[in-house]
Length: 120
Image (cartoon, rainbow, N blue to C red; front, side, top):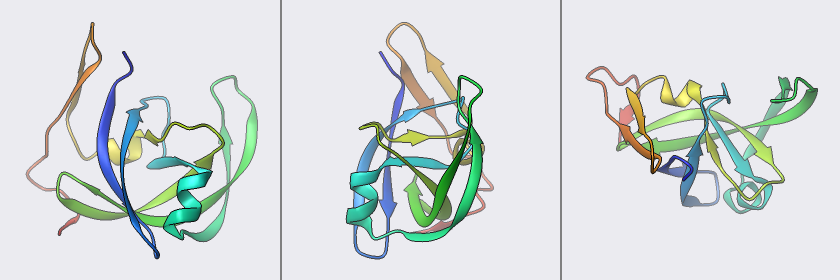
């Protein structure tokens, strides 16, 4: 089973609740399927060269949005994917102690005392 966690992604048009894969190999904040980004109305803020798991370098567009995770909302950089899977990366998870139980892939995330975001 793939480890997942729930979050809400906030754009200029809409907020969408997602169940995303906890991806410890992704050092960004959030990666979303392109179809969700269009619905959210995300703002393009730049371009970034990323290294894929196979070592390939690829230029990716970066979008601004917010994520609500553990009742804390923070601004994040969002990358897009043609996959149907959303990803939560280590830059976002850096704020939370994470453990994954195998077998089963159950994810346990805890909120730290000093969160660095704003409650909403």
